[in-house]
Amino acid sequence: MRQKNWRVVLVGLVLVVLAIGFYIVMLSMAPKSTDPAALMRTVGTVSGAVGGLALVMIAVGLIGKKV
Image (cartoon, rainbow, N blue to C red; front, side, top):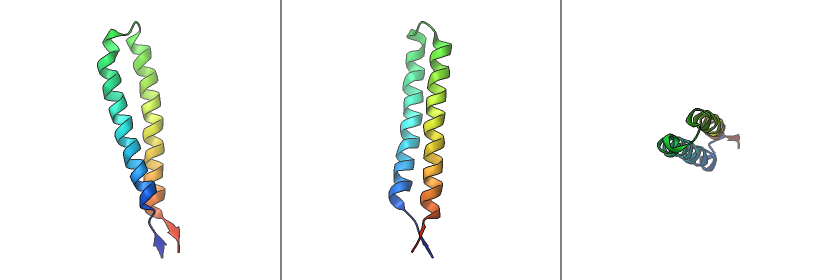
């Protein structure tokens, strides 16, 4: 039987929330930038990477480890 690792799942959920929050905050700051398209391209890349890492952490935490 496998035991779920709830700490990893919780950290993954926190990272998802942080990635979404970062994207929304930067979206509101983009109009003030000198190059909003480049800014949002970079923000989207970073948010996507953090979100992808978070989803992998959630999946690995839910799969768990052998006891």
